Amino acid sequence: GDFIGGVTLTGSIIAFGKLNGNLSSKPLDLPGKNYLNLSGLLLFVVMMHLFFNTESVTFGVVILITTGVLACAMGVHLVGSVGGGDMPVCITVLNSYSGWALVAEGFLLNSTVLTIVGSLIGFSGAILTKIMCDAMNRDIFNVLFGGYATTTVAKGGDEGPKEHTE
Image (cartoon, rainbow, N blue to C red; front, side):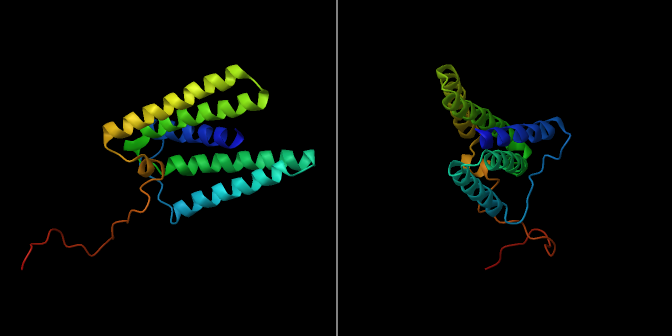
């Protein structure tokens, strides 16, 4: 819940900034951005393993805080990598994430109401995301990961349209 909540919080702030015009709507295109995402996920899994296998309360709290910081950084990077045109789909994904975070908190607190409400929010966000991707003729994988496996356009040296000759 901590990780999903952090991604949702900072991702929503970045999405608001892009849609409000406070931030550039151009996607954040860092070199090796997908490797950064995978590294963040791997680091989260390692921290989760450490958290579950520690006896120290102080170390557990430090891991939770570190997970929150990692999640906030991942939220900025994940949503920043999405262009302005795909931002409505990104917002529905973040809505779905908030539902899944609520489900995790419902399990943690043994609250049936939180679990059911979180499931409704999570599934409705996921269904809306699927509908919007189909309507926009976009692949959800490319929206979420900012054009995974696409090449960048070469800069300079282009002389314009060329005529085909045989």
